[in-house]
Image (cartoon, rainbow, N blue to C red; front, side, top):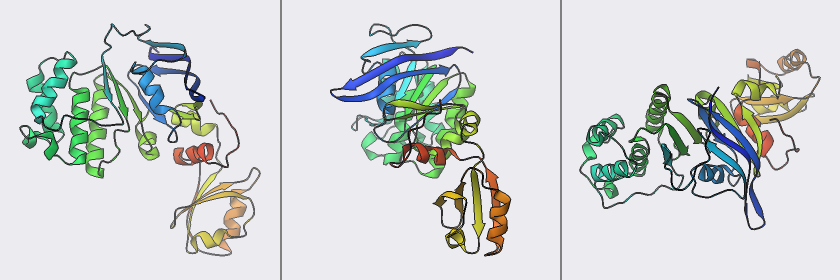
Length: 304
């Protein structure tokens, strides 16, 4: 397996703050690699170092086996978390400008194709300032991918999009992967990361705490989760033994059971109190694992 991006022992500090601490990471070519982590965990700093916007204090970064330098332009498309567009420019003019900056080919055809694909073609000759927030985000996404980069880095690409446009962008990202692109995206949407990513990396307080496929990550935590729906809801679980933690979703409760607890005994005890409409023994979701690691009361664990 060829790793198109490799980070080894990367550390970045800002004064007394260690933003990224001795991080090593390998991104397989052609994969969708999800970056997750709480706000301020080091995700964006890591992305900016990959993009050469900032440089590590120590460690090495290789793209296609070579250390990047300021004189060589890598074939990368980057959608930053802080969006920024020239508001007075017309959409076609702005995309032409970005395409030429990135040495894009056949830009006129590409601009029409992507504007149409992302439902913006009717705004082609309108100024950016006339667009809604979601439309501007789609426009900046087009500017990111217009030159057909082999590596695409998206910082919170779904943030602020309604479900229809998020689904549209998801389809485009998957199509770009099929065409051979390697895609890194950071997200707070754990369900999207679960469904889309070949690999998931989590950084917390500057250190890597998860890295691997979803199956591999879930295997580290075992089958200690039970999803329950009952007529009594949360009240049915009050006073029950063997329960370590409950994540209450209102109509459904996600229960983490203590080591040694027999799920069948728990079910039997619950049936004495209420009618059960769902009882599913499963591995923890990525959202649950995220909360276990990032919550203030967590114990220090490291499942690499």
